[in-house]
Structure formats: structure tokens, C-alpha cells
Amino acid sequence: MRITAVTCIKNEGPFLLEWIAFNRLIGVTDFLFYSNDCDDGSDELLDLLRDHGIVHHLPNPAKGRNYQMEALKDAAHQDVVRQADWVWVADVDEFLNIHVGDHTIPALIAACGNPQAISVSFQFFANCGIKTFEDEPVIAQFTRSHNPDIWCDDLSAEVKTLVRRDFPLQYFGAHRPFFRKTLPPRKRPDWTDGSGRKVPHRFLVAADPRFIRKFPARGARDLATLNHYALRSLDSYLVKNDRGDVNREHRFFDDGYWQDRNDDAWEDLSIRRYLPALREEIAALKALSGVAEAHDTCVRLHRAKIERLKADPAFAALRNRLLNLPRIPRAEEELIARLDRGLEPA
Image (cartoon, rainbow, N blue to C red; front, side, top):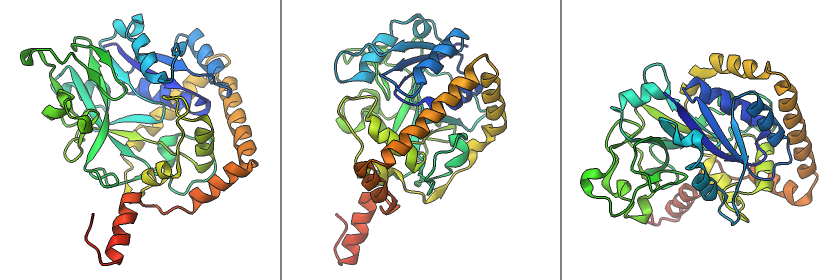
């Protein structure tokens, strides 16, 4: 089974080997990376891995502001995608945590009944009070999240989607594929959630803007969860904020982005099952000529940028604000405030 992972990156150098190694463990056979003006050694590391036959690496072809969608449009025409049995569109801070069989994508596909698409629900992992960047696997460091069935004040969770070759594709989206609205109902794809259940109809047909890329989370992750480490360490988050959104030009992360994803009420250690094999796979990648040195360069440049940002008054103020934000989402904070004033929930 050929499984191609497609992703867009900017300045993710220290985290690339872990993500590649993890996805190789769960069955990904090919990688297509699009990079956007990196200055942390990411491009050099990816080029080296390309030369070793591990990944495909292209500069992002986007001419407009929507980097990811333009890259995905290009990806649909690349042989590494066209020849794949399955395509997995995800970001480098997202890890597909499979709970069934041997914990691989083929096991998940089999457990879901081999549908044409599988959409797996997000679970946001909090910062866990970790301030300093460490060159250690992300999945080992960050172990707490929100209640998986509730994020902020929403009982629905966003998804990312595995797509089978024969899906009636009109185009890839970042969260889910789309088929033509004129497609007859009998030709609509067989599509499940992360529990092997049929996805809700309003998500399937993308008719309701509120449910184009999400659906109710409860009961949707029996077979797999998408662990999303959107924050990582506080210092690495400064670099993410400096970078801006890799998906859209001139879009940055406000304090609310941090607060809403830093709910650490729930402990989930299940992904640690992969750690022994993950460390071995990372070591194997580093054993390839020049890869360990290129990774170390990314780590050094990441740390250097952290120090420059911490010396910048604006980023120093941001860091201090984030340290003092409540560890509950804004919607929960507002609910508590209303109840304290004797008011009904909004």
C-alpha cells in the first residue's frame, strides 16, 4: 500500500525528523513537502532527505495569499500523489494516533471497512507549562489536552482526512476532500469517521458552512485520534508567532489562539506507545550521511531565533502575557464570569 503524506512547512526544522519518522512507523511510504521561505535550515534538511530518497521537496508554488490551498492544487498533479493508494494531508504538528490493530494506517483502514475516506477528529494538546524548547520528541513532552469531546464551547471538532485513490475528487482541502456538488447521491463516496461510522450527512455534502470541516466529536475517535500539538513549548511558540500562519499570508496568532488550545484538563498518554520505535526510527534517519548535522543546524538556528525574539520588547511582552493567561479556554472563562455574576449561561 502506497500512502503519501502532503504537508506545507515554514521554519519547522527541529521537528521534521520526528514527524517523518512517526509517519513512517504508521505506514506512510512517501512524503511531499512544500516549503515557504524558510531561514532555519528546513530547506537544506529536506533537500538532503530528498537526496536520500526519503521525501519529495518542492518550493511552494503559491502566487497569492493562500499558500496551502495553492500547494494542494499543485500536489494533485504530482506523481507521488497520483500514484498513491491513499493520501494524507496534515501539518507537521499533527500526529495520527491509531488505537487499533498494530497502530498503523492499514490497520485503521481495515477497521473502518476500507472506505474511500476517513476523517479523524482533532485533540489539541496543551503547553503543559513547558517554557523551554528541548530537542526531544514532541509526543513525549506534551501529554495533556482538553476533554476530547469538548473544545472550548463546541461539541464538534475539526478533522483531517485520509483519502483513497478512487475518491471522486474535485479538489483537496486542508481538512477534507471535496467532490462536485452535482455528483449523484448514488456516486457519493463511502466516508467514515475515526470510529468507522458514516460521517454526518451535512459534513459529507459540505452544505452547511458550520460543518464543512468538523462534526460532533463524541464517539468519533474509537479507532484513531489526531493529536495536534499546536503550541509546543512557550519559546517555540514565539517562533511560530514570528513566522505567522504557513497557510495564509499576513495571518498571525493572537493570545486567544494560545489560551483556547492550552486547556490541560485531560491526560492522554496513549501515543507514547510509539516512543521506543520512534526513537529508533529517528536514529536511523540521523545515521544517513549529513542528516544528523543538518538537524543539529536546524536546532541551533531555532534556539538562536528564540533568543533574538526574547530580546525583542514586543515578543518579551507576548511571552509574559502568555505565561499569565488562564489555562482554560476563553468561552469557559466567560461562562465562569457570568455564573459568578449570577447570570444565566449565554
